[in-house]
Length: 412
Image (cartoon, rainbow, N blue to C red):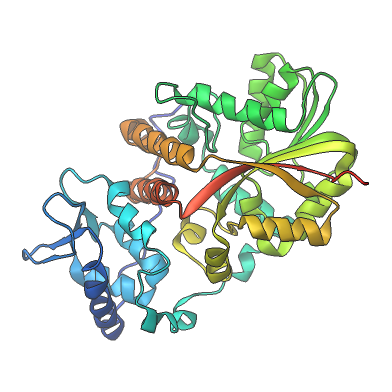
């Protein structure tokens, strides 16, 4: 996981110039002002104007380039806010943490747009791009767009286990690596993984769960679509002295029979269109009496219904093809397309908020090392916004993450 200081800039994530749409910009400005006047934040402009319902101690957003900011917001409300941060059109005030600023907005996500204007949502939301469909070919491209950025990049902000999903903290004092291993052990326990268990992991990551399962004496097969992850995972298997069968295949291409199937934060990359295929594949591969344990990011069902067909900033810049399900959607898909059902669920939502905060702190602390890999300033602001945006979502409960135990109900 070496970092080359001589690597030329190779990862430019520049955003386009602010669009020239004066009417849309004026409309965005007219909507934003009364909206933020009901949110406990402060929007400060260069000319000294202040909007927002927050007092002097409220999180502060500084609008550096108002014309560009409102132009982006007017041209594409859902994507323009994040793009404006990437471009430097706005930033946080002195002493304001980005997640603290975003949290009041996340807490009001469902109601922040005035009710009379919500009927115009259909004219604002963009449909998910066809090229991001999670077909076998599309899934590979979508996964590569994020996970093949650079193993060195992820190593600079993840804990030593290289685990890129929510940890499960036992206490305020427990460090991130220990909390990640605790999370992994919980998944393996839920799937009844012991010596001799035939385990299939859908989504290898960098191998931490596969290593832990193999150390229990299980026979482990793990699959991934990321060649970068696969290469490092193989190195880590050798270092740990474990025998793991790693395959660069899609979940739709797996054959065999397994006593335990585990998958951590993979369903978000499957896409609603393919949830029946994903769960049907698990059903087909699961041996009689077997157990499934997955970790899934979720949102409330009414929010899933409202956002399922719209294209947002996260999908454009971070996770192409991604879609977060609801617990109801998972239950319904299992009921309609498999013989499986959820038997237990464990929420780790606040643990994810803490996990994301620690990742962001480490990312910022190690930015100089990341920059030498060829990542530019726009990428830094993009990644910072992504981590803070998600942290705010989990803090407020707009997002949650669950460990779900799944099996075939006993006949009787």
